Amino acid sequence: MDYYILTLFPQMVLDGLRTSVIGRAEEKGVLHLEAVDIRDYAENKHNRVDDSPYGGGAGMVMQAGPVYGAYRSVVDRIGRKPRVLYMTPQGKVFNQSMAEELAKEEELIFLCGHYEGIDERVLEMIVTDYVSAGDYVLTGGELPAMMMIDCISRLLPGALHNEASTEVETFYDGLLEYPQYTRPEEFMGRKVPEVLLSGHHGNVDKWRREQSVLRTAKYRPDLLKQANLTEKEKELLKTLDFPGEI
Image: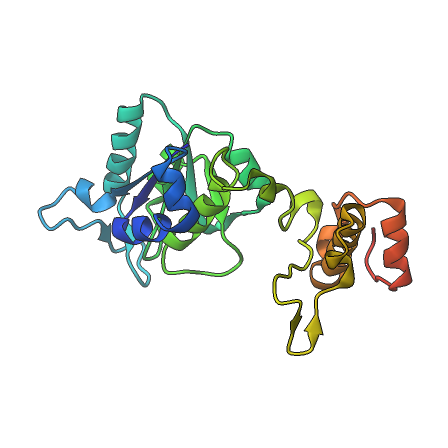
C-alpha cells in the first residue's frame, strides 16, 4: 500500500506515523508513506496557499491551485488516479468496514484541509471520498488522516507481528473485544478470572465470546443490531433485560 498525504504539515504526519507498528511496517516494505507539502505548489513567492472567501465571512480558504498541483504531482508519477479521501466532518464517518474496504487499494491519497476549508472547485475535480473522523471539528485533517492510515495499515498482510490478532480485536464480528489480563494473577485484591487460568481452550473461547457480547451490550448496544449473534447469545441478553432490538 502506498499512502500519499497532501498536507501543510508534512513533518507532523510523518513523525506521528513512523513510530511503533506503522513505522516497522514501512521498514519491512509492507507500506510506503509520503507527505506532499501543498505549499510547494503555491503560485506566489511567499508560498501562500490561502485567501479570503468570496462573499465574505470569517477565516481563510485554501486555494484550488496549490491543492491541485500537489495532487497532480502524485498522479503524474504513479500514472493513474487513485482514490482521494478528503478529511471533513461533512463526510461519511470512518469505521472498521470502511477500513477493510480501503485496505484492498494499492494507493490512497489523503487530502488534509485547514482554515475554513478548501476551494470547492478542486474538491469537485479530485475527491472521490468525503470521510469524517466523527461529529466534531478539528483544526485540520492531519490527525484524522493519521488515524485512518493507522487503522487501514493494521489490516495489511505482514503489518502486524501476530496476524491472528486482527481477527479478535474490537469490532471483529460486530462486537467489542473481551477483557484482557496478564501477570500477576492478583492485583490489589482483584483476581484474574479462573477460566483464563484453567488451560481449557474451549472454555476460554466460550468465556471470551460471552464477555464480548456482554461488553458490547453495556458500552455500545447500537452495534448489536448488526452483530452475528447466536440464538443462545440473544437469550443471554434477554435475561439482562437488554432494552434494544436484536
